[in-house]
Image (tube, rainbow, N blue to C red; front, side, top):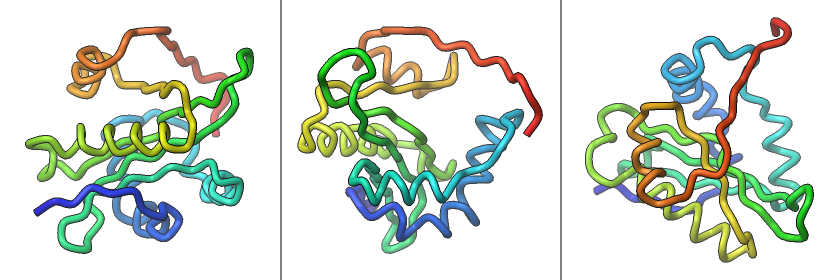
Length: 148
């Protein structure tokens, strides 16, 4: 039985970097310059602003959703910003991805966030899930300016 729960993301960071992050990057961001920044995660966690939901098959981490909390730059409210969502392909059937999303949303609300901002690759199944649950607020375009 797959368990989805809020967990200490830093406890799993080495496993994520070794086993999951590269698979995630190759699947969704193969052209992205850079790599996962553990220092950024440490900083966010130390400030109490890192949210991490893990999907566990027994005790093995098979997927995760990470997000962070910050004050909105223009309005006086706390926001949650989705960072990453990944499940190993064998676990993408059923509701595991949606359960990760819902777990992050509940935790963000519990911590006082007013909104959560999600991003998805155009045409992805995740975009379809978001389109049914959320309103489209902005469309983001990315242009690489430097290498590395």
